[in-house]
Length: 239
Image 1 (cartoon, rainbow, N blue to C red):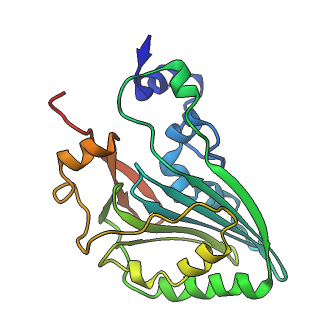
Image 2 (cartoon, rainbow, N blue to C red):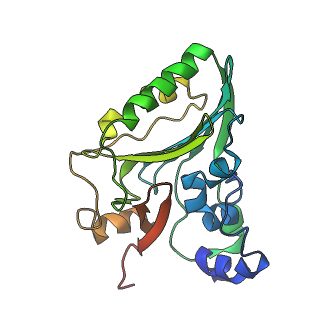
Image 3 (cartoon, rainbow, N blue to C red):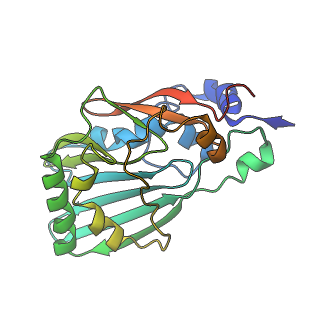
């Protein structure tokens, strides 16, 4: 029997409403990933643990068209001790109906970590500090999943912050931390790079392109300290 993934998640949601909303910081299970996606992107686990003496924890998310690739970088440490955890999801789960076996066989992210020197960590932190002074995506604005954008959920010195930068005209080029993260990345998977020079929206990325992606794209509404999942866009509403 074939079933759509969202139908199965809805059917299982009664197991634990709370755990279905709040991320633990892990996305190695497809059901956990679907149920806690916005919470994970928002770094709610980082915000909960953020305290004066908790050290630095930053989660950078690079979205390179969610149907193609999304990369996560967790930078954790203080002083001379820094670790960079990299996770890469190479594709989204197709919107078509799938068997339970196909759903369970959906790949988990590639997951690797490495040690960074203090100088390397400070290069990333300096790039983030500079990017935080630039325009970026303002609270109340929306970003679209086939776009190319950065999110950063950061705990530093006991203060939690959240910011977004979207290609091409909402701070994407000002994400000065990006080259360092790509350079230090221990995962040997090429980075999905932006194409064209137009902002990707539901209007500019119409049904034909979404049909090619075979993925239920979505909007994210950017708030002061998080993102909220908004409207979804199936490949073809007439099928």
